[in-house]
Image (cartoon, rainbow, N blue to C red; front, side):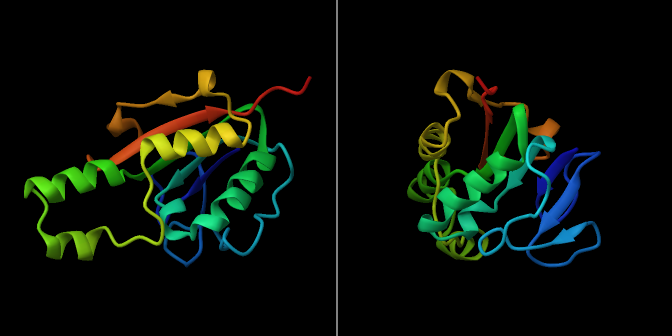
Length: 156
C-alpha cells in the first residue's frame, strides 16, 4: 500500500488522506490530532504534500513518528513541501510580490530542505539514505517545492 497525504490524488495507486473532504480523498483525518489508525508497517511509501507546513512546529515530531510507524522497514517517506529558502529569495529579488506571498504561501511553519533533512535524521532516517529529487513531474510538484525522501531502517 502507498499512502498520500494531500487534498487530491497526485500519484497513481495511492490511498489519499487529508484533514478535509475532497473528491479524491479516501480518508478524512487530521494527523495533527489523530493517528491514521493504519496497521503498523503496512505502507511501502508515504507521500506528504504541503502538510507539515500547515502544522505547528511542536506537532511535526509526532506526525513524523506516526508516519514512520506505518512504514514497512525499507519503506520510503517522501516530503514535498514549500521551500521557504526559495520563496524568500523570490520575494527579496522582487520576483514574488508581497500580495502573492501573503495569498499563496501562508504557512503555520516555514520549512526548508535543510530543516526537513534534520527532522528526518532526528527521526532515524539516516542522512546517507536521504535523497533530494529533481524530477518534479514524477511527483506533480511545483517549482517552489522541494522533494526529499528518507528510508525507514530495517530491523536489526
